[in-house]
Image 1 (cartoon, rainbow, N blue to C red):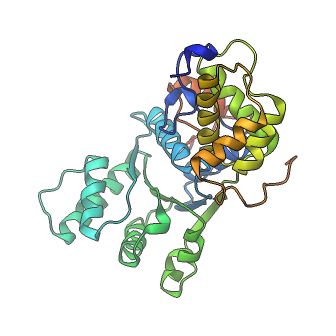
Image 2: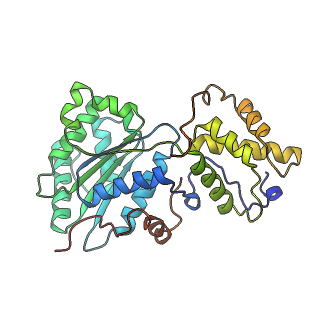
Image 3: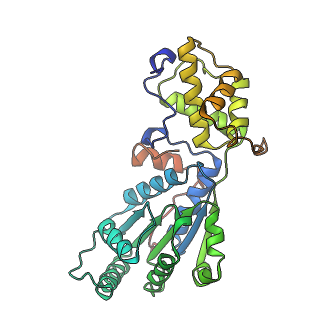
Amino acid sequence: MYAAFFGLKQEPFRLTPDPRFLHLAEPHRNTLRSMLEGVSTRKGLQVSIGPIGTGKTTLLYCLQHILMHESQPGRPIRSAFIVNPLLEPGELFEALFDELEIASSSNSKPGRLRAFHELLLQCHQSNGGVVIIIDEAHLIPPPLMEEIRLLLNLDNYSENVLQVILCGQPELAQLLSRPQSAALKARVAVVSRLRPLTLLESRAYIAERLHVAGLRGENPFSGPALEEVFKRSNGVPRMINLLCDRALTAAFRRQLHKIGPDLIVDAVDDLALTDVFSESPVPVGATQLAAAAGSELDKLSMLGGRDIKLVGNDE
């Protein structure tokens, strides 16, 4: 609606993931690097935790995209992405078999376990790996959590063939701290945490999304407006998107080419999110999928100044 008015080719702050709008701020780079290094060094079980709206799901899609790009005949990587963990154990196997393209003539649990073990054996023999990514892992019911632990028990090779990444809100840490999760928690080898953006990171996030959307002129958000966005959103990307989109819409309706802090305050009121934004912001000073594998790997060159080998070794 407002795109042409601001010289944009498209709306820059939609909540739906878009391959062109990946922004790897420091917390996202660090988290993605941690997950990649965990896979490359075959750590087995990883846990990634972040507050609501900080871009966890975006990073997981990005991670899977990179894994698919890095898979090759000499080092095959099979990955499965479970977006809804509210499953029965049988449904988990059904989802995994579909994602991993496992053919099984048996629907019994022993038959499925045998087929899954055969996949692990094939990957071990071909110097490859299997990566299971589970989003919203804080919602995993106890029976399914135990099923995940038992799946990890199938991997009895000298180097972990099966990699499992549990990603969820902070409640995931509480879930793993329960006595019934002690055996699974003991296997966690990597823990990464995704934090909200700082003021400088928030400004860069907004600027990059506007640029990708086609902006070539002056930023429509004034300096005070950007500070207000940060203050009201606490640096949470999803909240930043909501506020900026609403402010651009209001400015268009008023035919204003420059957005001041008053429009950000109005956006908060319009969205009835005052309570959500009432917490103190993160201290000053301290997403989404890549459009193509090549550009994504270019971005990841910033992660450590070296190539990250995802599976196998150089023997």
